Length: 154
Image (cartoon, rainbow, N blue to C red; front, side):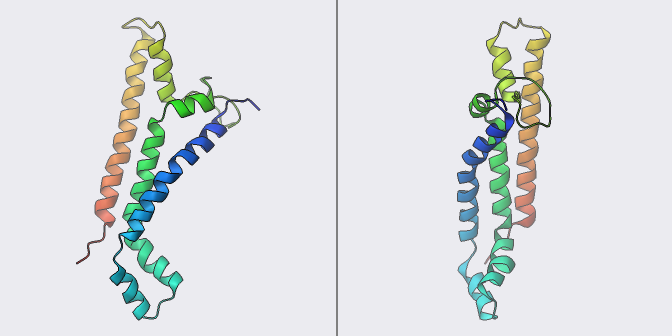
């Protein structure tokens, strides 16, 4: 097993984005009005039924948004993944070998001696555009999901 590998980068990124997911999901759950909980209890629901049947569906848009925001943050992360995953541009399903991420590729090529107009220089823009489109797609999905499943309370 190599000292730098994609498994260690994935574990570190998972630990790094976990507080964001937890905090935003907690905010979404606490934003559910207490009257919904009390209404479910008044109808004879158990604590588990209230959580699964009332609170989680009402907070679903906020919970999914927290995951999408965290994934978008992880996609743009450069230095954590560069340090943990190494700089070996290989494409494999084996998580124990070093890999290079798109953001790390941009850093590596831009710090090198790539002359303007060369293929290496042009790939910086192609990779940057790909990262932008991934982030845009995640944001559009997040906005659509929030609007589609957002609960309106009176």
